Length: 175
Image (cartoon, rainbow, N blue to C red; front, side):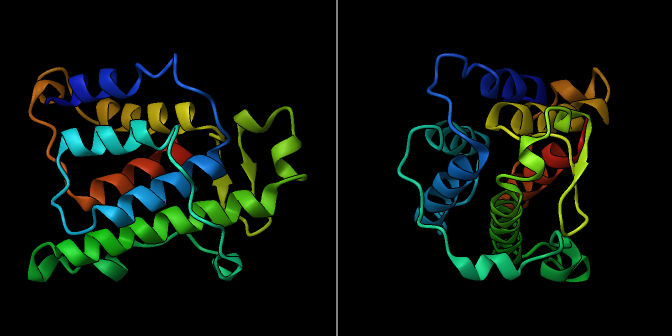
């Protein structure tokens, strides 16, 4: 599956039941934890992203409210020792928990701002532009495509556990 094909694949969810981003991410976290031992492929990533629209969400953990900074992949992945599958997975889990915590803190506050899609800062100072599953996935993948060219966007979409964390983070901050 190429970058363009993956983009088209994840943007075909118009008929899927809508859910708020926090619930979506809680469901995605539950799904990701179930397949932790599997290598992440483009097909599996696409399935996880689509299944999170309808799957049972994980229970919110109040400990996540202590998370105030977006995870830095360098904390989890040491490029000198090649990529660590465990580190990439841990990074992605940290991103999902960070975003869940942020959204939970913004309920009834910043999330009620009618202009939020022009960008808002959370109470912890993190910038957000996208607040629903469709926009965070579309903008995350759009960021991948916009940083490539027509030729590279038709190349094979190389996926690892880090890809999911990066996709969600780019989706959070990409306009």
